[in-house]
Amino acid sequence: MAELKTKVNDASVEKFISFVKDEETRKDCFTLLELMKKETKEEPKMWGDSIVGFGTFHYKSKSGREGDWFVTGFSPRKQNMTVYFCLGFHHLDSLMKGLGKFKTSAGSCLYLKKLSDIDIKVLKQMLKENKANLKTLIQKFNAR
Image (cartoon, rainbow, N blue to C red; front, side):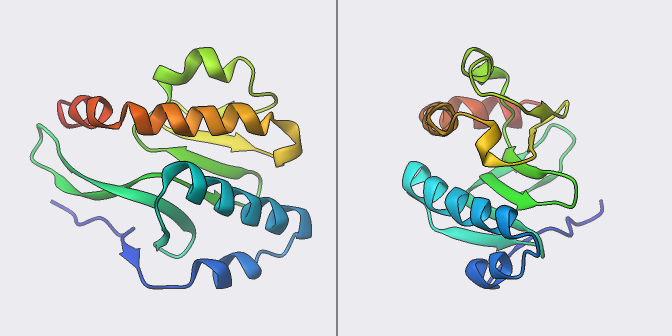
């Protein structure tokens, strides 16, 4: 089985964000950094060369694949800022109705153009709910 390429490392989160070219995106990243630190009560870590992750969990799927992954995080991508709810956000549907302007992937990616497009209070609540339901979400994730 192939090993995951995206792993936690000791690269500087602040240095990574400081190299984001677009000024508004860079400011949004620093805002997300502080918001996620506060709401997750976790220190940020770089995962690979472009993801800022918070918290970790160990997974072991039915297929036998296992490893460690971050619980939530973000990455300033070229087209959108991606906010990851790595255990999915299906349990956050009611909150997402009040979030604002965003897109999602089928899995766990929330795509934002800029933070001013969303209600930050709703995002905070989504992070709190995600943390509160973490144990149950990990059990469901491992059952796949």
